[in-house]
Length: 170
Image (cartoon, rainbow, N blue to C red; front, side):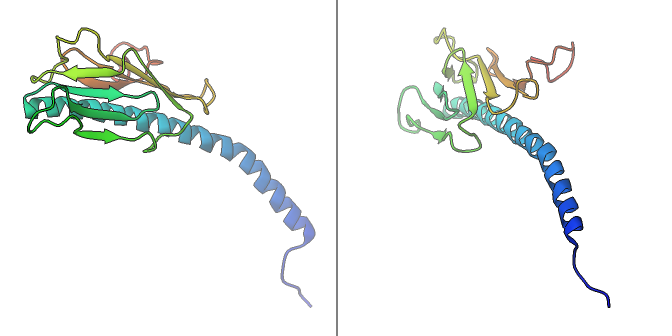
């Protein structure tokens, strides 16, 4: 007579294999999620800066981009007027980021002129934003940087890339 089912030895071997695979896969998965959060925050900040630039051209007015240390940002007109509100749009910190994502910048405000360039009347403004994730080990972390040029162009780059001509380099 033949019995269907698993023996205790088969069940134990399956559990040992499952535990061994999990101990390897879970940390790699956490690293991938942490690096994806860095990328999400960097792209969000880049998009916010680009939106502020476009709004300054569209509204023919000075528009301010304000970043917060928790990755939230706001776009609004410097001088509130008809057709140019103090708050045009904003993004909260809970969209795509985590409490482990850290944002640091040389300044937390950028003002765009009606030509879409960084406003020359605002001498000190945001030009570099560094994004990292404290949950990811330093050797596995893909920290990113958002760079705002004087002409208003915004770029996301990788500060660890030093190869000349590599488009990922800062």
